[in-house]
Length: 352
Image (cartoon, rainbow, N blue to C red; front, side):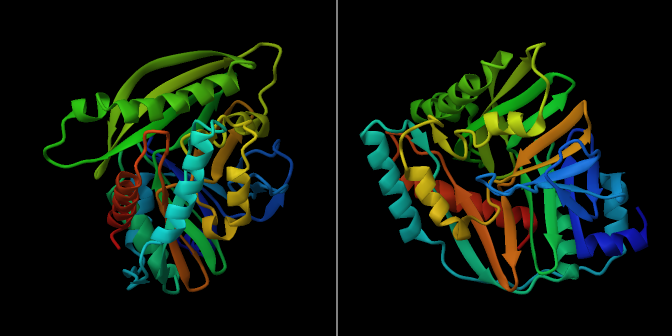
């Protein structure tokens, strides 16, 4: 990638950075299609996977190291956006939380993930994208995928710990990531490990993934561990699925099996509950929050993440969304504290 290519990329581009490889895949999109056998390509859909043409391809596909990407951006002018923020939408969240608890009490759901949002007002320009990406690179962790996509006057940039899957031949690796505490200097890992509500919430995600994958693969569930990010702590369980020999890997079909996990959706996925479908009516609030975003490198290698922990914009309106898992034992005040902690963590990561 050079200066000329970077100029085009900052005008309209997609990227995902793989943390443990310190590598970033970038695309300047030219064609969107429903054909997943175009390699290499990017995949982007809304949360409900309602867009038919969701694969994006181009002859301008690049992979660059974190350090080279930062050096390129460091030569560009960047500026912190002076965003005018509203208040986080507490009433909206309370209504979604309350309706979900009713579904759980009536045993139509075991778990769901209501979200809310913080609106801001500012026009994002090239210099602000550069500012966001540089901060993500500087603040990157081994556990979060930095990502971004934009074109014209809309886009989204963030750093997500929520991996949907990686594919290597017929081996699928995914994670259950659920259960959150705020990190501080007095944090003790036992606090989150021994919390019965958090453990139950986390197990719901494991249960959902195991159920979704067991009819197409041999599923191995590893031991649960503690994932520590800069401001938040989660429970994380690695899961490996070896697809049965008589089943051919299909990116979209695997994605439908996994997404939305109970970490961002509902459990059970096939519930008669209309709660998540009602949320679809209000999808203008969601935008691309918790959407599937991935890269197909070739027929044997691909990966997909869930676009949480980011900022999105459309014209001069900005939005930060955050959600949290709710089960029978959840209390509104504690869940609201978690929402605020997540929004604060996003702002800190982007240095805004």
